[in-house]
Length: 157
Image (tube, rainbow, N blue to C red; front, side, top):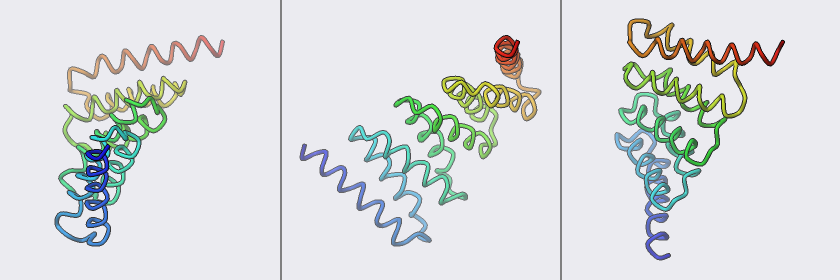
């Protein structure tokens, strides 16, 4: 119990430094460290929210992509599929490297499927093709989009 309190105290300290000095060169690191502290105590919701806040508050941060992914992975872990989908999608839109963006779009699609939002799931797979048509993983994404649209067609008819 005491260790948990110490870690939560550290999280609060990191966050307060980042809040009090938002233009500091290490403000983003404060948010990231606070999120890691929440994660260490098993407070995945708070960790994910803090990672997501970092990504939104510090668009130029070198930690931004990692923060987006950690936030989305956390929401996925606690099965908050709507939040996971939105954050994976936001991550994919801000990530430039296909090796990270393609999985983010695919995870977003999977999360959208979990909440029966097949339209957005299909759009995520289509986005893989639109953005990364030369990547070998594109074929799988198009196949997955086709499966989703077939599933939707059967429900409509």
